[in-house]
Length: 384
Image (cartoon, rainbow, N blue to C red; front, top):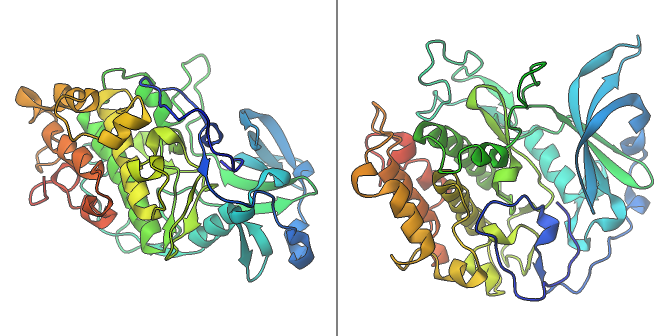
């Protein structure tokens, strides 16, 4: 989510229990420029050919000070409606000056569109089926995953189908990945936040392994392309059928740069201690810290840190609330709980992964290449 460049006052705190709050609620910055540039001068005319009138809006998914997200279907020429879609509207006047990027074809566009367009047009060769594959215990494994098949984008990153603009908004056309509600049945959870709420004491280990593996794989792909997300959290992991998930919301993303950042437009509950101290930071290590917070939330059912001071202490003290909460779920006689036949999925190894990601020392945190090799995800032979 794109947010105004204003430092918080008073000092930030994070709620212990899960509270749904978009990125706009928490922002740190020392940037001097907050106004957007005027990109229309170098915009090619082809960008604005489509119109929102070509879509039937079926409802609103979310709304904030900086944009809207809606359910929609495209109207075809014969009058019929296409499959379900999601349209994200970004308010042009709210886009920060450093959230624009010049594209060789489209001119100056929001970084969210730049990054999603680049990802969606990048080819990816499907590797062998992963140990954390959601269908690993199903009698009928997912037949859409074919080793060696070349696809566009990454299976666990939301693709950008199209985009267009008018005088006030950019419109991002995205696929609808959430399951359709069964008439008369309960509404299925739409994202990881909703799912965690239904498991107040933490998710089953097999589900945690499935989701963490997919998220880590998506982030490994992003980082290999020089892209950082900078707003990893449970609300930005949308759930699909059969325990599949996709990473969304690239409004805070960026391309890795040598000098790093002195602004943070993510959510403070997931911000690393270096950010909370107001230091310049590199995006990859922040993504790893936020991934560790997501893993903790799935294990324990609540955020690990209640204040910025606690986040800066991390899990160093065995008597901190976060450390004791992790031990209560994963230590002692529970360390082997959830272990699968390949050696992965044990709660003790999940705790080891969380502690590795939540290292206070930035350079001590593992890369996502290394995270994918941990025993909790990869099974026998992985590190723990």
